[in-house]
Length: 477
Image (cartoon, rainbow, N blue to C red; front, top):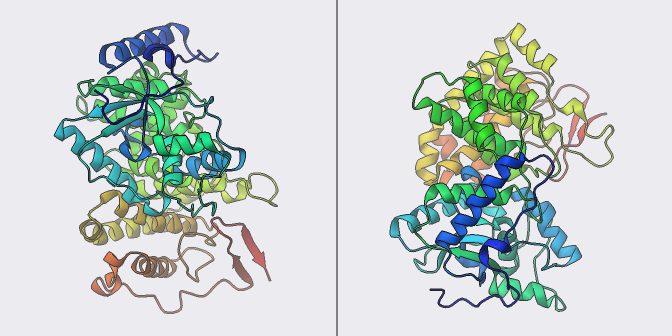
């Protein structure tokens, strides 16, 4: 059944034993035992053989069910896993074997490859080239995706735009060369494995942190959002206690009920917008969960402060909050909390919501004006959303008078919020889009998006300091 694929010589255990995961202290032991039994039963029922096999990385695609559909965390691959292997070498004893399903059903193959292309199109420069044209030897992966991505880095001699590393296998790294050419070892399941079992396998395997991206608060937020959407099928007003109960019962790791509740308030306030999914996908492109996180309490406080009236600003505040938690060199204290948005600042905006209303309305109108055009030209809604996220983060920074030194496009705006400065930011954002994407050339002319005269001047005595990738600070001259 595994034609064209070499057997992994080092694998001697049967499939169920090869992936035993030790129970950590914060697991609920009774739930864990039941989960372990289900895991072994799935492997036993649907495995193609007892042995794990090597599969070339170009034939392995991320499952739509992996982490509830959350895209791969690219910063983890670019800043952590990839550099570790590049600098320290590859240790074949650390990674556990992965789990894939051999897809042969045309509908499942189409679903799998569409997910892979959508994921890649949202951040094309952060992925190596992907070939999804072949209809054969197609494997859907729920365990081992980030490691497979790094092997694709080496397979294509990819240069990371984040770190500048060019991934070329050194002459003396024979084990790494073997993995890049032959592929990682995977247990292969038949195509008839149920979707619910694939979802379970993903969460079970991702609860293990051995050479893997650990479970983060963003994974929990995705689970909460799914629970809210499921509740919407039976009630127009999902209750927070119900969401807490559902997510707690389904989680493979022990979660604090109050943390789930805070995230439930956040997800409830964004019902019907799709913005929780955008936050999750933005996180996968920008944040390494092993280095930083945002407190669920902050998410809950922000949601309770803004209510359901300001969904785009709430999403923008989340972006800024993650940026504010970055640990930067030569900046004290670490992290520089002055760059984050605290509860007093949120409350101050609500005391006089004039600017808050103006910012939310302008961002909403901008989406109404350009969304369909960008989706049509890109043929990729995730890619269009990622473009809007850049502007909305910049707009939120202007609203809260945070630095605009590194917002993803060049401009000449600073100081306190005005609608004219917001319009100028949009003008420069559209110019960046036109320069970056051939599909969007002429966008400003088609929609008459011009710069507002006099809005591109900085506040007296202030100069923005730009650095590669992230803002460092503002400098008085």
